Length: 350
Image (cartoon, rainbow, N blue to C red; front, side, top):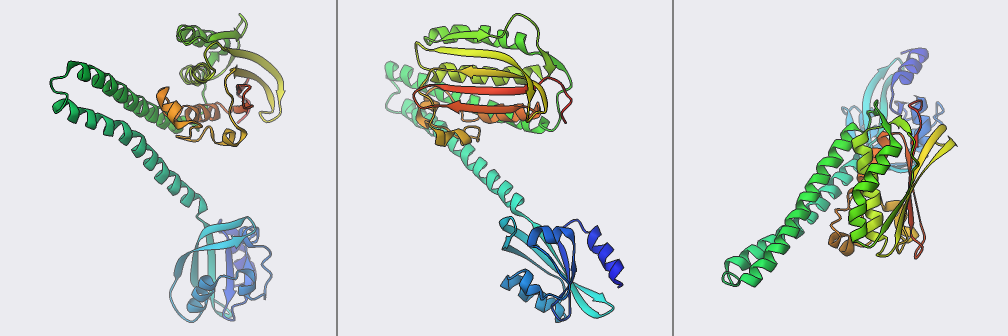
């Protein structure tokens, strides 16, 4: 194989690849390999490019006549340690036997698999707790409380709450699944954001009043039209305002503000910001980066008592991403929290 043809072959391979001669010295490598491990100069021993015993042993074996070798290896790259799948394939060049080495980064696959395992474990835990309670109360009602009306009434109330909690969890899991499925499809319809906010505030005001919280809305009387899925945006602001009412503290105020930004640097154009601010206890800084993770709770016991599933902010994040927007969270312990959703005014940004 001529050097030009080999260079074309290497350039055509989308994954990191290098070709090593019978003397275990590099013949060439593509740009992807250089981006992963650094320069790949011809004539340099392969072991100086990648010092990994298992990979080098597989290379020696293939150069000695063995068939293709494939192995998983954790290796140090220019981007840190990554989990890779390495394939060593025998090649016949004009100068004799050689080997092609490809390295595929499988870190994302491993992370995805771990996220899936964590998700299943979390869902199992969240469902097992109310199910265990229901089974215990059913057993009690069939036995010691069979002829105790007062106990029956109390246990049935608890069972109703636990069943409702499971129903909410399943509903939000289905909602999260739908949102993730649609996340790559940008909304094409238009929505009046100001009218939508006024409607959400009107809907939640009675429950806020019952909780001793006042909602103050500064959204104006006019129209604010932008690309969006009305149902999903209602879900976003219903969740944020409801959370502010729940955790803002009795006697407090929840402020909902809508304002226009002439130019939002990240969105590269005009945008609208919806801020939901409460006067609650606030959130410690160490929790802020993780608030939108599935099932992450600052106070798990309090969240469950309030009927929270730990999925609300994860759903909000995915909906905002679908709208190509941004979400910002600011909070100071003892001084309340501010949740800001920034949405582009037009569909110009891809």
